[in-house]
Length: 565
Image (tube, rainbow, N blue to C red):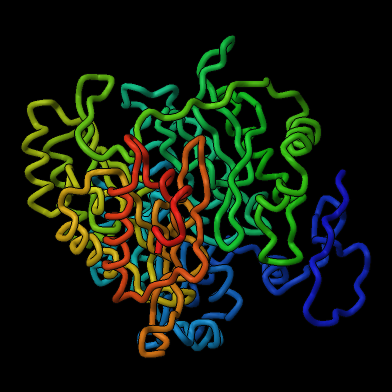
C-alpha cells in the first residue's frame, strides 16, 4: 500500500494528532471522523433520512428539520435548500448557512443515462407545475432539477415520480450520483456498443445500497459506446468508453480520476479492456477503492482524482485487480479521435433501424413544466415514447419514422426548441446561478439566454462550433475549464471603481482525446454588462486570424494575450 500523502501545510497551528488519523483512509485504519461531514455520516446513514422526511418533517414543516439532516443527509435524497432571495453575490462567502437557506428546496430527479419515457417526462412536468412553480432545468449530468419545493410536498412528489420508475435516491450527497450514458444508446448507426444495459445494472445493484452510501465525497460515472465520446468521460470519477478489442470485439476502455471544480484534473486510462458483462463488477471495484482509500480528512481533497494523482494509473489498476476483483483485467486499445466537432447529437440523424432521432436545443437547459408536457405529447405523436437528455443540457426524441420528421421539427421550432440552432444556442450552457444556488456570486441562466440573442444578432454569419459555458462561482458545475470560452462568476471592478458581477475568462478548453483546460490571460475579467462586447471582439479576432480548418481552442492556445483581451 502507498504511504499516506503528505499533509498540506496549515495557515494556523494545529493540535498534535495521532499518527493513525492520516488522510482518513479507512483501508489504513483511519476511522476517526476528521470533520463535521464525516461525523454526520458516521452518526447516521444519509439514506435513513427519508423516514424522517416522510413521518416528521413533511408533517411538522421546515422549522422541525434537524440541522445535520437539512444541510447534510437530505442530499442523499436529492434535496438542497435553495438560496434565500435578495442576497447579493458579494455576501455569498460571508454568511452562515442558516442565513443563506431559504425554506424551499431544489429537488434533483435522477435520470440514469438520460433515458426517459414520455410518461416519465409528463410526470416531471406535472410535478413542476403542481409543486415547483413551473421550474425545470436540464443539467449537464442529464438530470432534471426542480425548484421552490416545500418539505410538506416531498412525500407526494416521491410517490408520483416512483410510480413511473423515477427516483431522487442519491441524486446528491457523498454517493454514486447520477450516471451518464449516451443519449442515443442502442439506436445510433455508428455505435460501437450499447452501454445502457451495463449502466442499468450498476444502478439496479448499487444505488441505495448502504455499502456505497458513505463515500468520501461525490462519485460520478459515465458509460458510453458512442464513437462521438458523448458523455464527457474525461471528467468523471470512472468512465467506460466504447472500444473494439482486436481479439475480443466490442467492450469498454476504463478511465478513472477525472473531475473539475477548483482543482481540475482529467481522468487517466488504466489501459484495461472491460467486457460489457463485467462493467458492474469493475465499477464496484473502483467505487470501493474510493470508499476505502479515498481521503476523508479534508473535503477539498476528498475526490478520487487526488488519490489517482498520488497513486498513478499503474498502482490504481494493481490495487483494483489484486484487492477487489481478484483477477487480472485484459489490456486494451484507447478510443479513437471523434470525427465530429459537435458531440451533442443535435439535429436529425438516421438510426440503425431506419428511423430517426431528433436532437434539439432549449435555452441553456431551462424549460418549464408545461413545455415538458408538450414535448412528451409531441414525442408520443411522432415517435415511440422515448426521450433522452444530454450532457449539454439538450433533449432528443427517438424512433421517429421518416415521414414524421418534418412535422416533428416544425412543432419543436414553433416552441423555440431549435433543431438547427445557431452555434451560440447550441454551444452555450449555464449552471443554476445566484437565482437559486447558495454558492453562486452572479446570475447565469438569464445572462446566458440574453447572450445567445445578442451574439446571434451581432454575428449572424458565425458558423464555427463554439462552446460558451457560464458558471456562477468557481466550482465549475457548467464545466468552464473545458469550454472554448469559459466564464467563471466573480465580483469585478467596473470603470467607475464599483464592485459588480462579472466573470474571469478561460479560453481554449476542450474535451476529446486532445483534451485541455482553458487558458487564463492575466487580468482578463469582464463585467456582466461588458460580456457581449468582449465575446464579439474575441470571436471576430478568431475569424480574422484562424488558419484553414482551425478550431477556436487551437487558435486560443497560440494567440497573443492582446488578441484574447
